[in-house]
Amino acid sequence: MLERFIYRLLPLIQKLKLRYGAQETVIATLRGMGVRIGERCRIYTSDFGPEPWLIRIGDHVCISNDVTFVNHGLNWPFQDKHDSLTGFGTIEIKDNCQIGVRATILPHVTIGPNSIVGACAVVTKDVPPNTVVAGHPAKVICTMDEYEQKCLDKHIDIPLDRDGARKVLEKHFWGEDG
Image 1 (cartoon, rainbow, N blue to C red):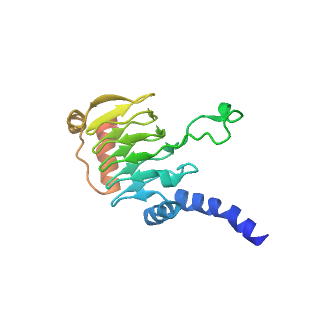
Image 2: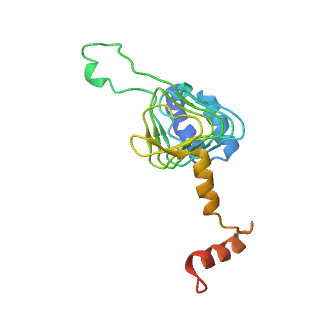
């Protein structure tokens, strides 16, 4: 009886650690669940599906809030005909990538190194290296070099302290009146 209770409690504890834990706790919890994770990663999501061991994350990767990993396919309608029909697939995120808020990554997908997946994108196929993808289904919208230039063009030099940053940003966006 106690074993069954603990067995049911474990996923809840894992979800709490993923949602509220420090980054070190999040990474350790995910590794304990079977996700392979490189160095210097930031992970802010908790939805790694029921097969987290099919997910690999490279070095220096940032995964934003509410990203969903789906590592199985849709084959329920065929279960009456084929008992053991499976539709599992791996997901791999290579080095130096960022996955935007609420993106969904489907099975059999590799996200190439030095790439960005935009917010709310649905990634159904491999993302080439050095690209930015967005939309659903996700499509290449520019190269990383082009995106870097866009970021530089919009750059606002702000102080590191929060109060100073607030003053500069309010003045920049709202004018002198703030």
